[in-house]
Image (tube, rainbow, N blue to C red; front, side, top):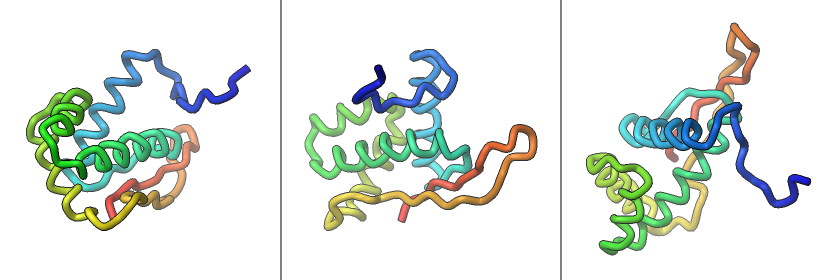
Length: 115
């Protein structure tokens, strides 16, 4: 049974999935948006919003927790900067916009961007 299992596997093993999400997170914070499939965007949204919420704490411990996942100091600083913009907001920092269907496999394409 899959009760309470909320991670989508995305057709990858654990290490590949972790690397994919890390790279997409770095790309997202560098460009403030990313174009991908709906399933990947939903998983990425959970990670991004969690990182922004952690960054709102502003302590050294929070900085280290973010850097532990991202492992990219420039991106960690960007996450801290972005979190300041959302200091009065309790969640919902990102938005998924559907843009169409990918031609090769008919996967639904979306844009994930910051509000």
